[in-house]
Length: 150
Image (tube, rainbow, N blue to C red; front, side, top):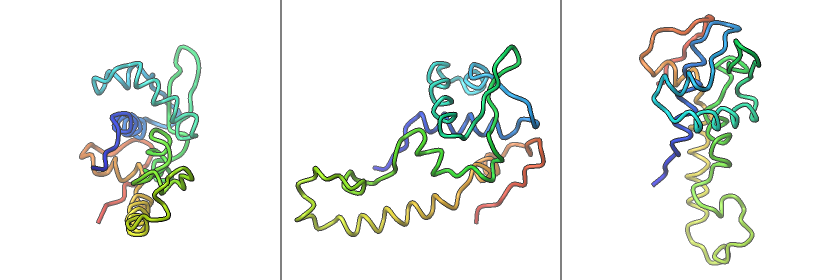
């Protein structure tokens, strides 16, 4: 089964909230966690990963917090997943694992590689704006143009 971790779920929830903020406004990790009944420590950890990846920015101080580093239309879902999960791969050998002793005799590596490429291609077409558009929530502030998934 291909499954993303809860950390990725939390990241997408937090980023969706941030997409609705008016320009220049920030929100604290604690507030983002409270909005979705998430463990505050885990929410803060996920937001720090997103910050290291350049997906969110922070502002220090009494009115500090997190905001998107760029428009939701420019934040790819693959980028979000990889910032939280690490490199995407269906199986270890697709990460060019030199220690796999089965590579010389593996009969499924090529088909799995094709599936992996198609999955990455599909994910590469999705942005945070798509997630927000599909959330069913009202339009965010800041003039975000929401794409429609076909």
